[in-house]
Length: 423
Image (cartoon, rainbow, N blue to C red; front, top):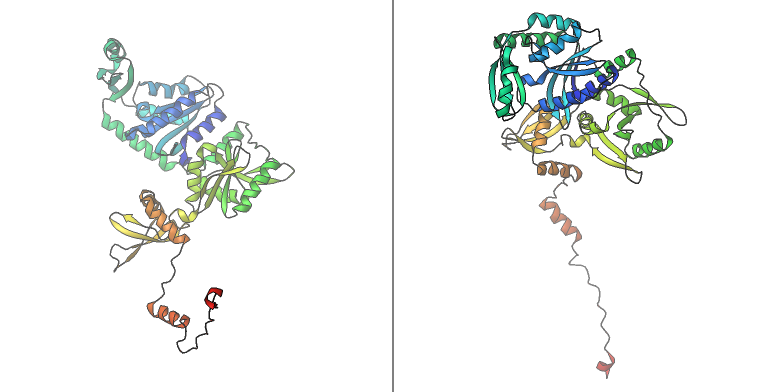
């Protein structure tokens, strides 16, 4: 199965929690490596192989696994040849970073079959590039690089990286391209939540949710009544939970599983959700589907406080004028179901040109546009312009309110003289 555009660290951690019983701390090294490689400019750093064992985990550069006799090559095949441990193996592809979230694709592998095929395709290594603490790099023979690196440490410090240079790099590149294509092409797309749920069932791990207390039910109902149109993300025990019809709406967008949660006092409610540290990415995903989203949590006084309130109409504001590739365009309509936006090129205001564009592309321009453009669009929406009164209409209005010149003026009452004047 292939799981696309997922939170890699979260998915692998949950798989590890189910399958790995001892040395779970190994995964912290894996998570750190994923974060480090996500910022790399090298395409090869985005392709890795990961295994979860009963006693630990490994995250290895895929390229090095296919280099004969390399450390990564030996590690990957060791647990197939020397142990009978059940291994969960995956191909990992880093696609990008959203905030603190490493996003990418995960492909489930048949570990035994993968090792056997890998052994037939490995490329011999000739030279090793050894880089030291002072950034000095030496190219040493593979068979003797460990011995030759020892005296170099005195001058250049500890070894910080070792790169294996195969005899035929072009052949290795071709092998990797072919294997990656085949692995991805034949893998069916699936839900990571369903996959993790099946693993939990196979390992006898039951997914049990805490009962929702009456106090929390009351607080949630008050928030939902105040914001009936919004998907409310309600903080509970380290997660943001989404209930009822909101949950059913959120599941397809988030790729999560719909569960049932017991209510204190009796009854159940449909629920889905995500970890608290994922709220930025998850709220943005729901927002991008055309939903109002309200993220709320208890404050110091116990009352619910708004973390973020996103309105669907602000995702790509209708009426917004911005620059797109040197052209001045206006947003006319946003079609969330079809992920399209209707715009008008108003660079030449005498000859406006309507056109359509994908929502993701337009959103990227909205994010890059000056804040002033966004504020103006929102201001126009909240204070729609009034139709201007014509000069003729103003004259008519003035004529109707002006006093009639022929009308008799009221007599003015004379001011009585003071006593001093009378005397």
